[in-house]
Structure formats: structure tokens, C-alpha cells
Length: 210
Image (cartoon, rainbow, N blue to C red; front, side, top):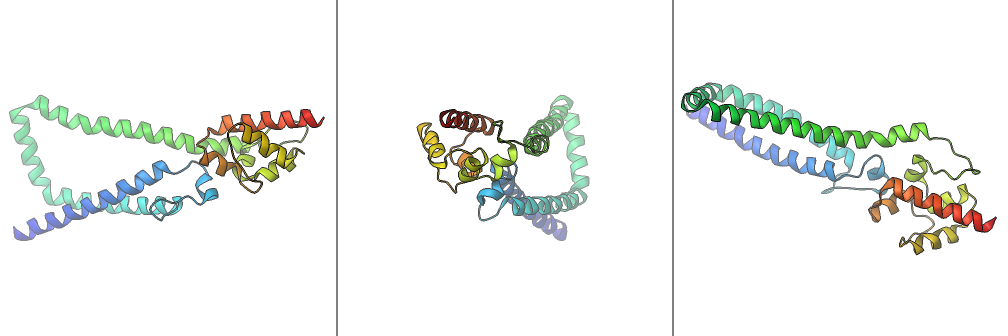
């Protein structure tokens, strides 16, 4: 009896520790920039980059599976006794309590699906619009991720200083060697809106130079 109580206490303590760790890494992954932005700007959360957070979160998830399995084995009989007792008192309340976790799982899955969908958007976008020409002002997803202001200006044959000045007029301070993705993250810009702004600015500059 003592061993069982001790085992339950240890398992519960470990579950608490792992739960807190999973919650922290989960929050970090939720806050992490989408796509490769995190890697490009050197983003970290409590000293861990996005890949490390993912690995730790996954590993702890498997640890929790094992701990939950042990917890269920140790307390299975007690769980059955409590459920039978609850059903005898009020079946409606018991069924309601059992349904709530299932609803939470469903909501969580929908949120995760939406988040995963946003993560995959950049990859599809890049593969479709990989090619560009200097005759048409179209900024690809790859440019938005990896180009600096200088490289973008060179791509479309406009003055780097003029491009920086135009962005400054729109409230965006930038330097020639600053990446577009860094500016996007620094000013919390929507990627499509920022891309449209750059295309508009470049169009104006090419019109002026023409």
C-alpha cells in the first residue's frame, strides 16, 4: 500500500513537471514566427531556437505518454470505482464531465490545424512563384525571406538609397544590409501587405527613373 502511494506520488509529481515543461515549450512554438523567419532572424525563446523547442516538446510528449500510461495502470481500479459511484449519483453530470474533455480536444485540433496551415502556406507560395523577371515588378516569397534591401534594389534596378527613403516615408526605417524578413518581424507587418507596399514603391521608383 505504501509502495503504491509512493509510486502514485512520484508519477503525479513527474506529470506535473513534464506538463509545465510541455506548456512552456508549446507557448514558445505558438509564439515562434512562421516559416523560416525564426531561423533567418535568429529567434529564440528562453534560450532555445525553434528546432530545439520542437525537439524538446516532442520528446516530453512521449515522456508524458509513458507517465500517463503508468498513472492509468496504477489507478485504474480506483478510476472505475469512482466512475461507477458517479454514475449512480448522477448520470447526466458524469456524461457531461466526460464530454467536456472531448470538446476541448476538438477545439485544440482545429486550432492546431489552422496553425499548421499557416506554417505550410509559405512553402506552397514559394514553389509556385519561384521565378521572377526584372521587367515585371513581382516580389516572390523567397525574396521576402532571404533578400536584403540592397539585394531587392539590385534585383529591380532601383536606387537603394531611394528605396530606403521611400520606405522611411511610410514609417519604416531600414538599412541596406537589413533583410526584408527582419523588417517584417520588427514592424509586425503582414507579409502580403508588406510585399504589396514594396512592389508599389519599386514601381514608383522605376517610373521616376524612366
